[in-house]
Image 1: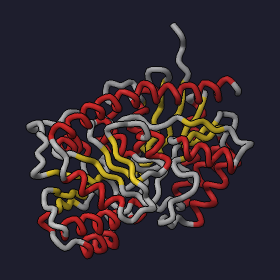
Image 2: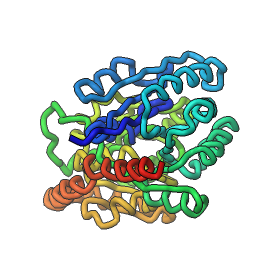
Image 3: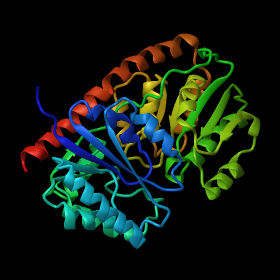
Length: 374
């Protein structure tokens, strides 16, 4: 029997879209030691991580900090952690987040071990305002890392253009399955069409563009659509969102972090998932929608076109056309049961393309290539 290589999967902060689909899958090929930096503001309790890896074989290492990430106590924690990692003799270290102290401890303790980074956004979204500390850490990681993984082809293309001498690999994102819905199966009813905006509610995701379009169709007398916003929201965005709403009875607003065990039923209760983003690199909520076979409405940014371009279960619209979203909502309001069923059948076929098995194979190819080169 082939002996497994040991790898370190290092999560510097909150559990992310890409972690959830690969951590346990990678254990089938490697001995995985999963290090998680747990902070007080992490929305997941300690028990969540233990339950997540239960019976999977993944070895969980929780690192607890109550200090700011730039505190020297975190630097000491990183040095102690890398002392432990070196003793495990791993073939590779992988991390999805950048941290200056992580990099410094790696260079001083474990620089002979290949290091791979996952990069979600090669160029930050326009609304993001990361600290100078973050930007320095990101630049530093480009000097230190041996391989850089991207989760969408558009970001892989940008990375290759900006850093042609660095080794990169596009692994993609898989569907995100949170289990079966426990409630009664939802039946499409043209008299009450339910559209879902799910995930963190941020400016670059165009929540205001969607509300403005929706309010206009309400003004036209179209009353058979209900719009849901489910997801975490900072106070500034919550106040802005609510200031745009005129008819609250036509909305379902849950502007807070949504527990994973609620996700299946939320998707079960809706007819469409919508992504009116101003810009996008990849989208975890998109992969949830695909898993639960919801027809999708999305702006025609490259990451959506990559995945949905030829999917007959989806509607892509011109993000530069101010009237496009209004017209789509009008068309959706008139959709027949027969037309909707056809979209739903196509959504079932789309789900098959993005299984966890196919995506984790991309990680294995990348990791094995890096291991063989060292």
